[in-house]
Image (tube, rainbow, N blue to C red):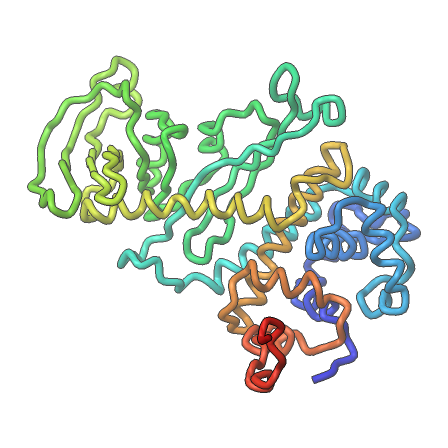
Length: 389
């Protein structure tokens, strides 16, 4: 079915533009702007993310050859790389961070009933960070090591739908554990983390807030067993214990009992020791929760591979944060479209389709009906065989 709008324009229709306008006004984003409003800047950057543009020149060139369709994509005039570069340097990155957060709220509501496969009603989060390496001479503000620059993307991922509910972008020197200081733990929620977040004062704050955590123990942790529950070793659970910390400081920072679960993975033969403050869940569920933490690793891998954050269009802190937040918003926007249109295709597949069809004037649901892209081989049975001598 043909439509008057390009696929890109239809995708942009899913954005809450009235909310975006209020955010822009609050930050004065369009104050004294004569060309390339914040909305157009977002559209240009979102287009770059969706079509894997490598540079500002690449964005300018690609859009210029489709000049006749720019108006239908929401652009009032041609995009100039110098104008876009200035916008990325000067428009407050928090505009796009707030837009991404609004989209995240929408997406989490849409995915709230997703099945985790764990028979849990709790909200389950995975907390982790990823480091994006930069060149120190080009990004001196992102100092990481003596000869290296980097930014860190600290992410709290809601495992129902793999939607990021919290993101903090820091320089590469910020330790992972400090991300816990930025969170407001939700009572009843479960936070799954690796050993880098084991700080007993911070974990006790999570506990006091009525939330739960699942992490792995450090090898040098001093503790003694208080009680051992019966276990079925055939399931992989070696022990399920209540413990008390023995370290001089750790026992003060976390004066209550903890639960220690030792699990042996039958496939790898590797034994893992988990630490949690949740005493009611089955031990196998504790192990399964930690296994699901890898979803946040997959999120980082996916967003690095399929959105443009490895190659930046600007070098200032504002430009880098603008690009990262727009990348996150595009990820969440595609997740919203997938849910609202009830599409079975993966986010990866949807992005692949968008990357080659954005200029097409076809109905978005028709374009994203992946089944229609399967080739019809019924009509080629009488084709000549190249090797049929």
